[in-house]
Image (cartoon, rainbow, N blue to C red; front, top):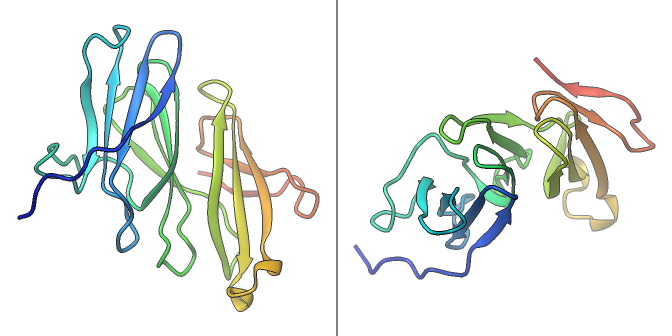
Length: 178
């Protein structure tokens, strides 16, 4: 057991009624130790929502996002989305983890063409339903070639359950859904 992890400045996302603070502690072996806190009273009191691999700093909660955290977006005191990837995984495993109540989290894999490595680079949500993600896709056979990578924009209108590609090369293709 070593000392507690160094606490870095958090990534903050705020709405008119709530704020979320995401503390990350550096990536290792395809994942990022993190802790997520939230406040609904203008910052007077903060509570731990979930965490991974940061004991003894915060109690671990296994219901959270796995992998390396790329981004966090919130819409009020209960709705939030994590964007994650797994660098060592063969596909990059780009995943969106969502909550509508601040306690139960659902992981949703982002769509990728077969034999493609996907690296999520950005995410935003306009409201609880409409969101966008940018994925940097690289065909598996050219994984070492930066020129082979292309950025693809995905959109959702149901909070992340189904995604549609909205770029020119694969316009309108629904690649994932229940």
